[in-house]
Length: 94
Length: 379
Image 1 (cartoon, rainbow over the protein chains, first blue to last red):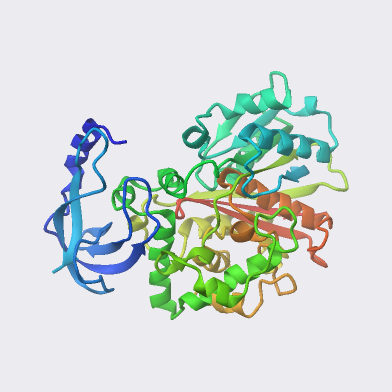
Image 2: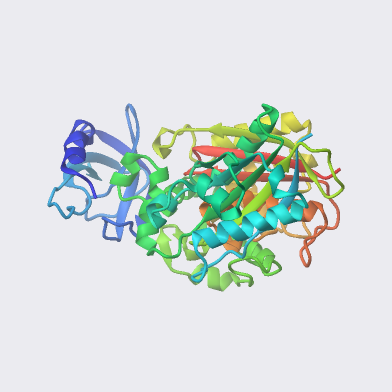
């Protein structure tokens, strides 16, 4: 369970790729999800100008290798029992 | 000369009637008995484990093992390096002996996993990944699936090619009574298994397992049954997959392997038998390439053509590997050593290699952040 303090601290880094544009270099559809997530969902590996990041996919269309994508603000994971909702960057087609 | 004088593995599997303590007791006593020494000769106990605190609310495993095995006031500690905990613990044993702090070390690898649900295990294992990967909802299957997809693109491999890893390792496990899945599987079964994280399916994945293994490592004068450790090397890489230079190889494996060959004064061609870290089918393919057993991009073809079978050029994972022998994560690296020692002593009933004196064990933590490579030689 994430504490409110941890979610607050994550704000420093969670949004740094917001609005960044990159290219999908790999992808996987997670069927068996870990605690705190409800599958299935896609996770993409995105190559940006200044490095590579992983993040969840947030688009109707299926991600494709080589697709141009942009980072957008979305809720990440399920809210914890204390009701703290964490936001971060997910990816969609650009 | 540092050698392994005692080796023992418990049955791997869903051992619902066995506790963490039961497994430590059986493995520890088994290795001490196999070494044919008085337990008062043990100077240090190392317990390799990743998840007992999270899954069993049991930390402080070093002292616990000493209590269970009645080893009096012997110094003891726990070693954690994710799924490479066993290999790293062995390396620490070698280091302690070389430093003159111990003459005989008992290394126990143990994990008790099947009391928890799959999603709880998936979450706990992600403690070996980065925070960004956890936030993305990735699992370890997912991390290796991302690597598999890049490998497929680069080397024109497919999901069908991965299936031959599972078929080989299940065939090997069918001759190992201590394996979790001691039965062969057909191609159709593997290909029709359910998807876990695309493109990896159930039979591409090692299972959730309970089990323990232990070895006695010593600098005492070598006896006939002892097997020498001629190389013990570790290497690390970024914990985050996204920070890696390449997604089709594990740099830590390459570096640890190269350092181990140099330390032992041999080349990959000299290896007679290997236990490699096949947590997922794509991991074995990358391992046989990164360890120099074949060229990059050739691993899946060589496995399909039987080069790493029991009767092939270089038998790989005769225990059944992580895939079919099972993967109680803290125990895996130690179990690999137990299998090599058993083979090099010519005591592997039903699955014994005909000839061979040099074995290699390759143990990986996380998605490639830690790699331990050991080379053993029977004199």
